[in-house]
Structure formats: C-alpha cells, structure tokens
View 1 (cartoon, rainbow, N blue to C red):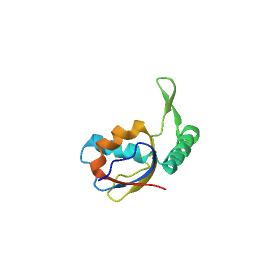
View 2: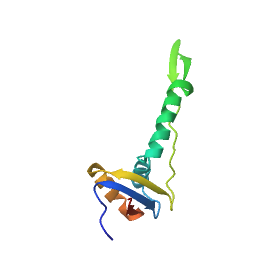
View 3: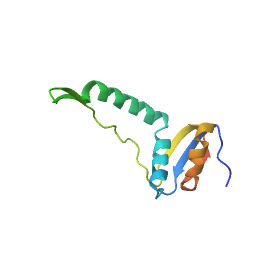
View 4: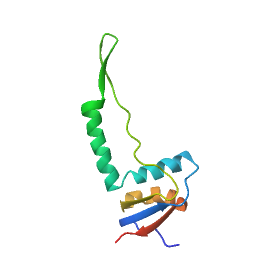
Length: 106
C-alpha cells in the first residue's frame, strides 16, 4: 500500500465504517470538505439565517430559536468523495486510513 499524498486532489472510497465515534466523525468531517458539499452547506446556512430561524417569546422578550444544521453527508461503505488534501489534514486522514482507499485524482 502506498502512502497518502500530503498535497493534491485525492479521491477516497470508504471501505468500512469506523466503529468508534471519533473515527466516524472524522470521516464525516473529511466528507464535508468536498467542494460540492461545501457549496450546498453554504446555501443551507444562508437559508437557515434568512428563513428558518424563528423568534419566540421567552421570559417576556423575543428569543431566537435556531434551526439545526443539516447533516448532508452519510458515512457508508462504498461512498466516494474527492477533496484537496493539505498537510493540515494528514493526521486526520492517517487516523482513519484503514477505513479508506484512495486514488490520486488527475
């Protein structure tokens, strides 16, 4: 098995779902770094700020009740995602490397 590059565009495929909570969240966080996911999350964030948050009375004054963030990505075996790898991500990727296969995108 070759080593994961520290820079460049890499496509990851999930071989198995991490059983630990931390590993699961790390893969989920890496999946959210994909450009398409970031774009959709940014649009949903704007929609939450402008339309979905509501003001309700509480203790005699208005109180902002925030809508929860959408969980856009699903960690499941066989899922693929392509991200721009940076040296800052190398420890996160190494911690869940046994659950991921990777190919350098061209």
